[in-house]
Length: 222
Image 1 (cartoon, one colour):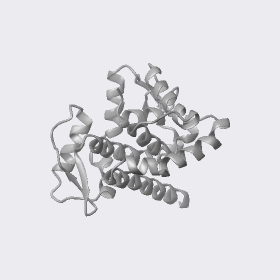
Image 2: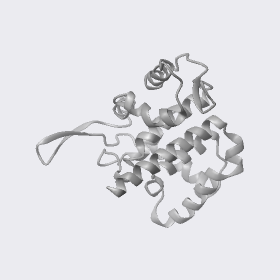
Image 3: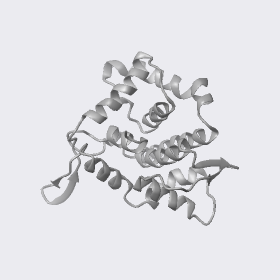
Image 4: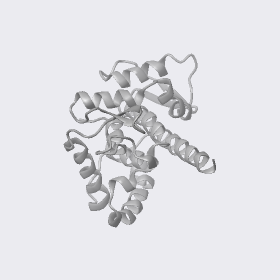
């Protein structure tokens, strides 16, 4: 089973070119940091009190990336806000995207190739080797959004991350997008979602949205 980080990165990766889709490149770091915190919240490892993120269970998860993030947060001399960790965690982990890619390569889902930019500068690409895991994710999301199938908490969180990271156009074809965007808005804002997820998860999702929007606005103004 893929975790939220792996699912999000696969969706943000161009299957053939093996690089991050340009429309999501600015928001993706916030999305990946948020995905880590969402995994911790689902596992009962964190809470938010007085706007500060608190580790309540620092036992290892068995996943190297999640355990590294857990140690960074737990070792912080001061408790920080969710907004701080969504903004800073990806940078503090130094190579988060590369580590996720490595995990997906080890599982045979991606492969690594080396190309040359302008025929000179070496650059690595990560095209899809086994499309089935990502296809299953896409099928699940489309069934929930377009066909009204029942969703679980984890899928709803992934839909929120997809929305925050500007990946809706990547998941849905042109004829589906109008309906998909309306339905995703309903899912993200619905009382059902609000009741099913904790205040901690709401804080994380809002921090991802704010970070993504601010970054995109700054990029547009430059």
